[in-house]
Image (cartoon, rainbow, N blue to C red):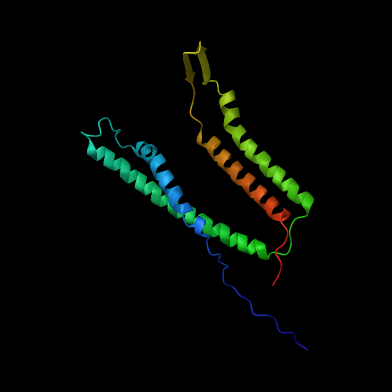
Length: 181
């Protein structure tokens, strides 16, 4: 006697975005483009704008930098939202979830990672010999510091990502399972 197996469906589950989610990439793109245009242009080595009326080319370059950043932000946010929707659809169909104690531990560990991410640059600046502050009354103060090394920034970003992932898995594990159809 042979049992027939149900047909496998290899299609990727897709969720339709809600109407409020359609504008998130656009809003993020505008915010990143406006806020990051000057910084991106400075990092790319373009000349600073001294007089906007006499140097329209320098202003145009900064606008182009903002448009490039806005496009990249829209692509990244859209791809991230699609990936999160796919992972959410797959996790919603998963039968096994962590027990409550494990979910609470994951949420707590994620929160501690996020606090630790704030502490990484603080510890570097606190222990750096080249950074100090000097105040002379309430009217004047001088702060001399060193920029954070790239390893410190990368460690902070990784710690934030791990903390968010741990907290997300913990929150997912604490939610009740969706009823099966």
